[in-house]
Length: 468
Image (cartoon, rainbow, N blue to C red):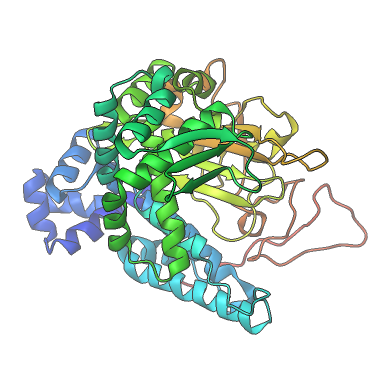
């Protein structure tokens, strides 16, 4: 539990419900003065009181963790650190107050900043060759999955009903999917060469064609996607309507993401998958083998185990390419991803490229002391033809150190001595002794001396204190 954030979270939830401190304290069976200390982060919260708070305020325990406010605070820090804004430095206390007490206002600030960035890039001539403005619908789609903690109960229910009807073991899933497509929908499924495509469906001939380049586990997933398209369209469109995307492009990205979610839930049904992950202590290569899926598919599914009453370990999930571009990102673990720019070069996510196929493990400690057990593995896909580089990505996951004992990857590790200090990104990191730094921090002045060469690429002065 992030103690520095829970007080603000409790205060915000209390005010939203129009409760006085006296009224909430009475329901909790504590004094108003004690509640006041909790709201000002001057008293820790016991486990029993935390449960009472969740019940009284009618929220999940995860809401009280402060992870949402923490991510907002990180994003706000990025915004106000942008030198092109020309804004005065904003004290950390004010950022925390804005994120904790006025999250809607904080989100509005972030939305304005994103709009400003798009307008600035467009005014500077950065546009698509067609002349259309860059609206970044991928960020809008990513925000939806982040806001829902990558869990959609309505889609789980729809997929669960289909999986219950099929009632097959993981080893029989591919056959069962092909059989359902044939018997329920009159589709024929063939595997063969497909130029420039991995899956192609022809509604006129009711033919689903899968590329011969797809490995077996991906063929099952693609059949699951097709089944989701045919049988869960109403559930997917209901989620899409609630999301109210701002453009057809964003709607299309969100729709595909939701259909992928259903396909994953079909191939890896919630309860059996969660039980297997716990039984195998989250050894994801073993979990993937049990369900006949890829390492990436198994990790992606693991990040969605957030059903109330049957939650798994809260993980973050990340997929990144060798250039540092993030193509997938979910966080149920409260890991504060930097929204703009690259991540820390000291993070295991990047070193995993050096050992393809091997799971690398790291205890990563952020500047605020929060620590996460992270594991990462480089995965590759077949090249389209000889001479073309194979697409390579690193798939990474992590959880708060409190859950490390539930993971096989923690076996044999001294969780305190093995910690590696990382930052959110070079531009936001205050660590003065980092030899891997790519950029100086935005909020510090450089202090370069031609008479001395240091061990780090940039030396800088400590940030001057600001008046709050």
